[in-house]
Amino acid sequence: MIRKHENEIINFFECNQTNAKAERLNGKINPFISNNYGIRDKDFALYRIANYFS
Image 1 (cartoon, rainbow, N blue to C red):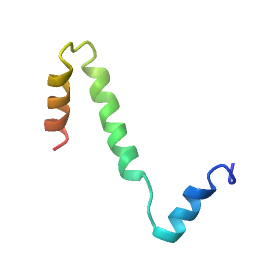
Image 2 (image 1 turned 180 degrees about the horizontal axis):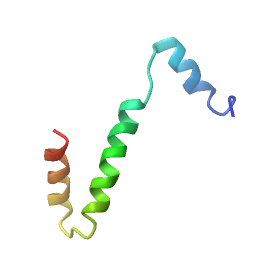
Image 3 (image 1 turned 45 degrees about the horizontal axis):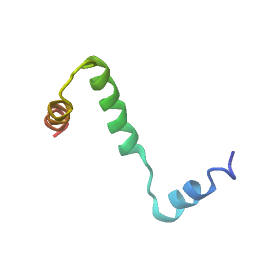
């Protein structure tokens, strides 16, 4: 498992960067999408997501 994620582990120690912000945003978007399942207008849905998270 360590060898599989070796690049990410080394990146953390060299640059002190993680993907925590992206994971948190994904964690917020998924419940929003599940609560609004069935929206037919995708442009409107993306507009609502942009306003919700801005």
